[in-house]
Image (cartoon, rainbow, N blue to C red; front, side):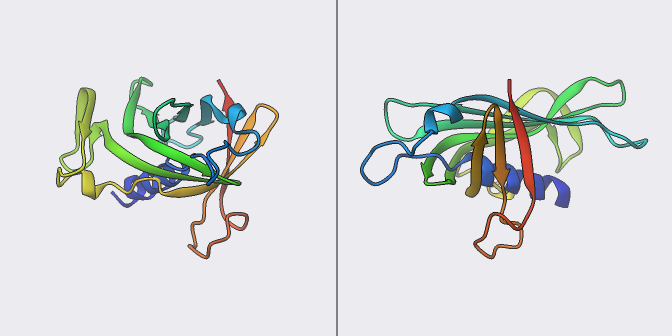
Length: 170
């Protein structure tokens, strides 16, 4: 459960942070952020599943831009399922992304250890929504077709001294 909460926090931090700056002009290079990104890890030990982390950033003509995050893992048969996901709006300010989730969920219910056939979504106001840690802010850097997501795991306000996750454009 702690791992789910931690990963959801990282995802929420990562995804919900891309908006327009104070003069309503997008930050330099923000257009390159839009689209689909993936980070994959292979389970290299027995009992550790293969995992995929998908990010999708979409430009919006009305209000803040949109993000989606999906954390998928393989089951015992090697079939992927969505462990957790969230979606919402984001803004970009300089090299930081700020997000606000408007729904969270997944196929796996960590509270009852049930795997659903489809994603079950929870919305603000639902007590389960509040149990998920969602993305609030992350640092980011675009390098060619790579997206570096920088988290502030030790919460000191510095995004370059912690974990950096490399996403590749899909």
